[in-house]
Length: 73
Image (cartoon, rainbow, N blue to C red; front, side, top):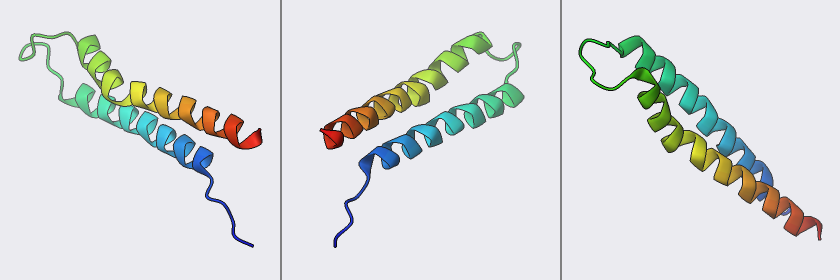
């Protein structure tokens, strides 16, 4: 009997990895941020990190839910 590959778990794991990368990158940026040398406020850095990591994470999570609903039907 051949076991089917579980894409739902793959997408959820990738989504979690992206959230962890967001947290790590934000912490690294915080340690290197200096308001004297950077013209952008720190929340702008967080928004850029969210754009790069959180948005794809949400998309992967939604795709994982869609795959789960598709395989259950």
